[in-house]
Length: 257
Image 1: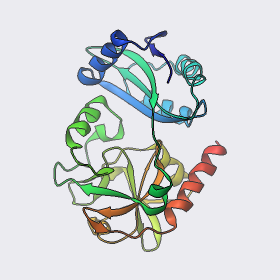
Image 2: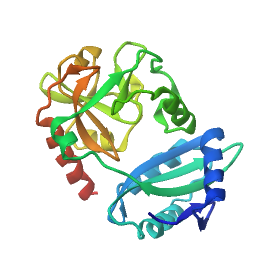
Image 3: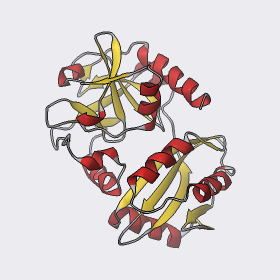
């Protein structure tokens, strides 16, 4: 993997000092972050991730500088990696970009599905404005909540409906059509979700918790694309063709810009 990070406008060695600075911001600062997939030297969907990041923080995001840094960092990558951009505010302001190894879901996960669990608490407050942003506070909270061996943990909102996963959006097949919880249900406006909704492949709506009992369910984010769910808390789900179709639609819309 690469031996550099980008920290506050400068490339630095990826050493103990740089990592400690970044870790302090992740653990203690306010701010937001974006995570995206790098494949064969290309950071996928960088523009819309930066768009969301710029709308999420109170400081100015220098998109041109970040794009330039990302191009230089990812040019050193072969295969698959995870890119993380952190814009932190008080008490440790700055911008950091790191690239690390990442293992994407394998053919078996894409074909057979993954296991998820539903967290009984806490529920997502639908009127919480912070749910529209990928905050460092939420990252810390999600890390504390994610004690399961399941691939993903799902969250319900204060109306006992499906909101999202700790690190992904949820798509359910409702009346024969893929539906993802609307933004006012308390979910993050994920980039894969956005592409699929804007293309008309997925509708926004309400996903009742009953959808977690034997229906067809999928997870979506920029690292995994669209992955089917095989079981929820040990209950078998339907693994149909929708995940494959939506994954293809997402790839197509990304290619078309």
